[in-house]
Image (cartoon, rainbow, N blue to C red; front, side, top):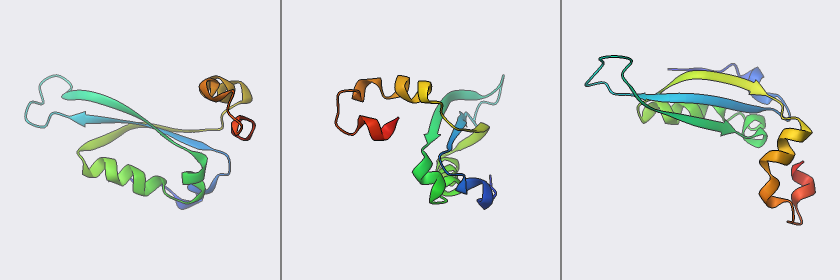
Amino acid sequence: MFWLDPALTRLCGYEVVVTVARCDCKNMSGNGIRERTFICIKPDAVQRGLVGEIIKRFEQKGYRMVAMKFMQASDELLKEHYIDLKDRPFYSSLV
């Protein structure tokens, strides 16, 4: 089970990027990994202290965490990420 320090989950404006892998427990030959899933936990969930709960739910479904990093998205990355919403009235609040 993975536990995250609650102090780290209160970093304003930060996203948590988690990579989890589902193992093939019946066939552990090789690395036993069948798939990998990218999870991005947005800043509002980080501020609300939900990171541990979100990760726990994935673990309960049979995934295990293989990587995690905290990052604060640059303006350039946000503009690239939300490019499809550029013409929407709320776009300026996203970047």
